[in-house]
Image (cartoon, rainbow, N blue to C red):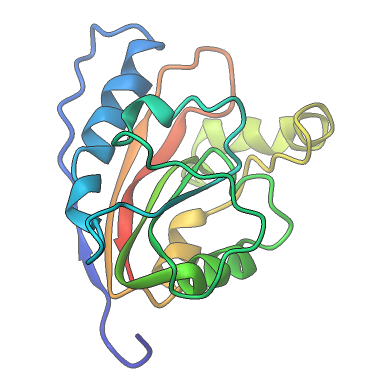
Length: 184
């Protein structure tokens, strides 16, 4: 809500350094989505919308029958919205977050896992800049240098639970990520 101070909290994840790259995102998603049932609405059902579902890789983490294929979503109708590796490619991040807030009911949750820009003083950021144009062409408009944590902090969620992490994707410029959830 406007005028209220954002409550920024750190999330705790127990990631083992010995995990393979394919296991790390699965474990992170299990931990990220473990409290999805807490946002079940008064009807007893979880109304969930996933933005950019792709091939449905997140469906295994949802309570049964939580995902829906919606074309028009009424305001305040969703208990949770999920967005993983999508905000890098949308044309208007702030507009997308505004729509997320519109469709969430009061107290609803927005879950995210996104790759972000590396620290501007790092070699990773330098290589993100070098690869940026080619990457955008090859990966459907994906922008390597978005600082999505800033967009989330400015989006007027009442709470933001966010952690910056690094995922092991050797020889790619997408190692820095943010993971968490925000409450309307």
